[in-house]
Each structure stands twice: as structure tokens, then as C-alpha cells.
Length: 175
Image (cartoon, rainbow, N blue to C red; front, side, top):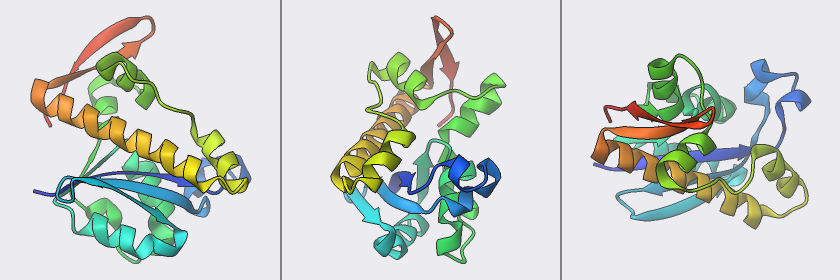
């Protein structure tokens, strides 16, 4: 079974496109995937978005963090396919249903894996604008690796941890 872990970074911030209701206007800067079939990472720029969409559509499962409400929406202008119909596990959505509130990927990564994210989306947009595409790819790749490791931990242990206020909290998962 080919699981594709996925994240993307955008060219624009939400306030530059008229707010969060206009995510589809944010445009793809860089996307990174990790395929269990390939056993490694791949990255895509806007010129290669067709290859990215093909990889997502051919996956047995796409796993990400906020992919249903963000990443797939960013990609909407690039395809006629409804990516929300793909077999997907959105870790954020799963946790939000369990907990009744949203959590940050960094909270899950630190509490479960002892790993911290290497930046944020605003910094990635700045790097993109400065032409530092390698930094954007590296940052996005780190996030994909965190998502992959978090998913694998949850599959194996049937739980992950989040940092909830100042407490480390165990959350059951059925991945």
C-alpha cells in the first residue's frame, strides 16, 4: 500500500488574498511528498503541480496535517479533480474531532516525537519571495517528515501525545 505524506507552502499569506475564505488564491510555492512505495521524498514547484496531483491521486492513502481544509483547497485551481474525494487522513481533523478543538502540528511533534518544527508558514513565504527555494523545500520536507513519523507512531501505539497548556496529554488514535 502506497501511503503518500504531503505538505505544501504558498506564495501568499491569508491577509494578502482577502482572508482565510480565499485559500484557493494563495498559490502553490512548493510541495513535498514522502511515498512509502518510493521510500523517499519528492518536491514540486508550481511548474510541476500536475506531477504532484498525479502522485496524490495514485496513492492508496494521503496523510497530512490540515490537508482537507487547506492544502487541497490551495491546489483546487490547478485541477478539475476533487482532491477531497481521495482516500485521506487529515491528522488535524482527526484530533479536532477527538478533542473538540484544534491543535498545532508543533504541539504534537514536541509531545510525541520530541521534535520541533523548523519555522512557520510566514517565514516560508518570505524565503520564497527572496528566491530561497531550497530553504522552503527543506522546511516543507521537515513538516512532511514530522507528519510521517507522527502517523507511524500513532499506527504502532494507537495514541499520540499533544502539549495541552502545560501538560503532555495522551490522545487515542485509530490509524
